[in-house]
Length: 117
Image (tube, helix red, strand yellow):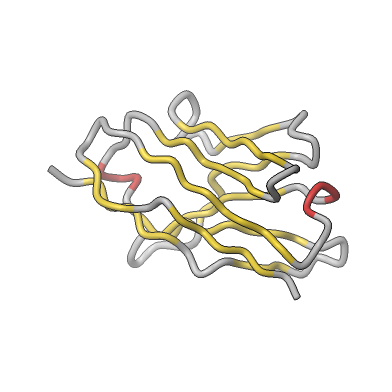
């Protein structure tokens, strides 16, 4: 079965950096685009970044452009989110997402990112 396991979250000061990882299993990772979402308390889940199967096409939410970088290593079945210049408004639970060809969404358990001095 599909498993997505996020890691790398934590507490960071404004302006700091974190690198999130999502280890995937249970499907052919290189056949699917992957996404990072985030959800802050009281807010809807927000799409942060998308990377296509081979990493050739990438898109970002306007709020993170120029600060976040999504990447993937198909040999390791892992997708990453490098987050730089973090702001308090980036604080959220970050989720890795797989969308199947049938439109089914699969989620990891999430990793908490806290940005505070």
